[in-house]
Figure 1 (cartoon, rainbow, N blue to C red):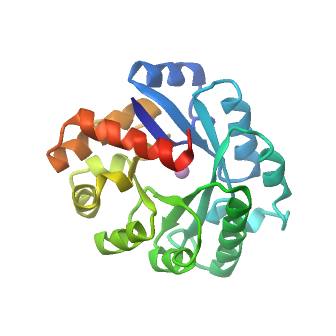
Figure 2: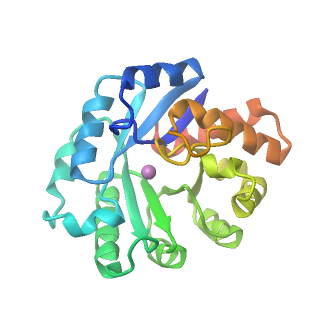
Length: 250
Ligand code: NI
């Protein structure tokens, strides 16, 4: 089976969520992790995952959202964490692509949420954009498991994350012709450290590039990884399934 380890299917861009979920199941995507990025989206995601056995939840405060947070203790997270549906903390991390002006606030909430993950013994889903070195510096000495979601750093840094036990999330970008670095990573990193994801509705793979993404399309990601590595789709699919189940204890 295929697993989409990073979806935002609570998003308003999905008008008919039931149809999106049915389409995923019909394409062999049998489990999905629905990921929040602030209080409101995490609550929306919780309401959705409650309705289906095969949907799991990750909650967190995204680095681009930290300035609007007015609850220093993130007590809303502790509230949602009472649900058994929560399998990870995320997406959390650092994003200097959109705005570098509040790096310290981003770091503060990143560290705070790593502590929450440790407290609840959960893995983290890390969003890291144009901030690989700072992310690495924070994570390198932490005793927490997790995935570098939609990894966009170098192969060299990827190896450093893998050395410390982290997984690398590979999504639709790997199917783009010009995505040289992530193709290299998909080829060279041990398959046991890769997770399949869509980040839908964003980053649709070829042949849907530029359109709205959905969990069913994770198959294009897995097919591309298999092609790049010269391995069978079945073998790659089986390994990526096992990886997701192991990290998130699905
Ligand atoms: Ni995301």
